[in-house]
Length: 460
Image (cartoon, rainbow, N blue to C red; front, side, top):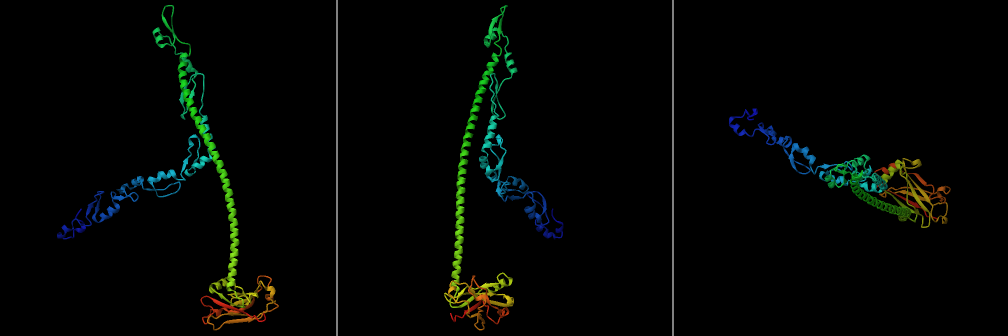
């Protein structure tokens, strides 16, 4: 409808140009025939129109918006989820094939027709058949035993039971009697055509028909039917015997296969056990070699760092981290590599407490001298009595911290070692920690300190 109430204020000269462009003009949607405002047309076409055309995001087919649910039900590319294995995003066109091959899809055993009620996964059907061969054979034999063959001297009829198996049913006595009573008297002309009895004349000269002996006619008819049913039964029995023969051969073959698999499994287990034994032996050998390699590396490190002239400089790197470990109690003491007074002389090392020890705990750096057990101790003079000088080096070479002492020969710290190392002896108040942190000094540089030990070799 036009003009809009809002457009009344326009001058008559402009109304002609405004017509057909007014945003508040009512227009008709070409698709759904709904009346809407012109300024709502784009939004209506894109979001609201029931007849708008959409493209399926799966198969790209075009359809009306109102048919979206119906299309999802038939879309060949619509993603589906297998409820058995949980796999998602299976196109509908491939879903039936997935159900057939899904390893976790459950199906009835193929022997369900003879009584097996097992429902197993697709991937385990073969295992079920192999493990249940005897049960399946018993079910088949039970089904076969339900086929009852009745042989009788009398006549009967051939019938199909509910399972499609041919059975022979003997006649009832009443049927035999009715067949016997079916003979009646006829005229001579009838008797000649029937050929079923003999003619005679009575005293009046009338021709009479004498019925054959009792039961003869009925028995001949029943005999023909009995022979036909017997042939059918023999064919059925032959087919069933062939089935049983095939099943017996299959059972024998499966038994042989299971025995072969059992033997192979036993051989595989023995082989696996042998391989496990070899692996354990190799692991022990590898562990021993790792230990020897570690000892060799340690020896090489000691040989690289040790000296044989009684003078030793110890570089302690990563000082701040090591000091934090000392404060936390994780690693309160550090041992230096060993050094010697000579190639065949005393073996010694240093012991450093970065947070102090004894009287210097928490306030000082404590440094101690340790006499270690060496290979040539039997050739040396004991107790150890050489003067020892300990130094914390100023890396600007201006003010080294120095402390020296002569060993107390009565102390066990300087007797010939009977264990790996003697009790440490030295300076618990070697250097105040505050002095290390002072900016005026250069004892710690690049997070590293250097400690030097000098053993007086006089008299050796």
